[in-house]
Length: 113
Image 1 (cartoon, rainbow, N blue to C red):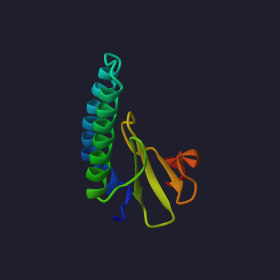
Image 2: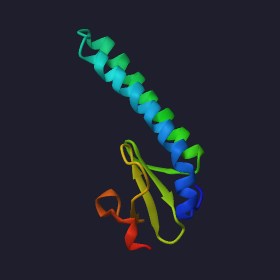
Image 3: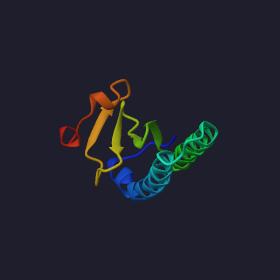
């Protein structure tokens, strides 16, 4: 994985957002189809496709040098003991957390400045 300054992470964020939104939309479309399926075999097939799409998202984000810490969550390693943290739906990178803190330990990025 790569090391990022806050500006580098913010510069890469549009690509991360685009990839994440694409796969989120794909998964949500399939989730909607689950409601119309009665056969358990078809449900399992569609669930497998959903898992495949999530796996492709993980690989796409990791190929950008960004770490995936949960569904639709991306962490940019600062190299200083913390990650700049972003989740789908956020406009910018506005939080960070320690390597050990995880999502529950997110703090406002303003505390770093």
